Image (cartoon, rainbow, N blue to C red):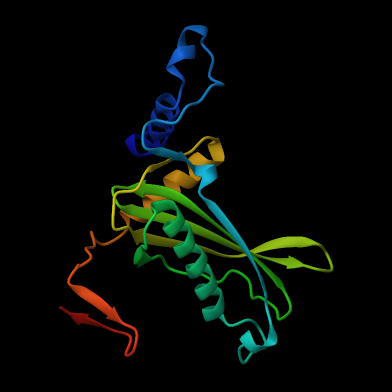
Amino acid sequence: TATGLFPLFCFHCCFIKSLDSTTVKTISFRSRVLPPNAVWMENSKLKSLEICHPQERNIFNRIFGGFLMRKAYELGWATACSFGGSRPFVVAVDDIMFQKPVEVGSLLFLSSQVCFTQNNYIQVRVHSEVASLQEKEHTTTNVFHFTFMSEKEVPLVFPKTYGESMLYLDGQRHFNSMSGPATVRKDYLWNPRNTTFVEN
């Protein structure tokens, strides 16, 4: 079907655009070069580690979900800020499903990556996992998807491997599911005293 062939077409286009034109005569697909104004997806990652202290627990003696969401958002924001070169604004947050509770004392690993960009929009994926100290295994607890908007146009993010291509398509789907474009009014300033926006 056309829908099923579209991801393959995207893979093919990304791959062809990144081939080194100087090696086409030798029929070599090993040499890859970035198109103009583009960044390899593998170079857009940030990671963090959190120790889940008892003060973050909920009434069930598990780590409060809001704490996990805040840490994921902060890392995603830092990733978008570092990638775009300016302070980003969050315009969409995808549905959040908690796959596994996080116990007090756990080591929480967060990995953030830019998986899709368009104009001044940045789609960020944050993967959250906990480490079991007894079994020494990592288990996924959440996957967060944030859409940020930068004040200026951002570079294209380009996948290099098949796995990154899958993340690229997934990020594109999440971006396209956003209800509509967002704008930032330049005549609004943030007032830190009362945490409201005041109009000039």
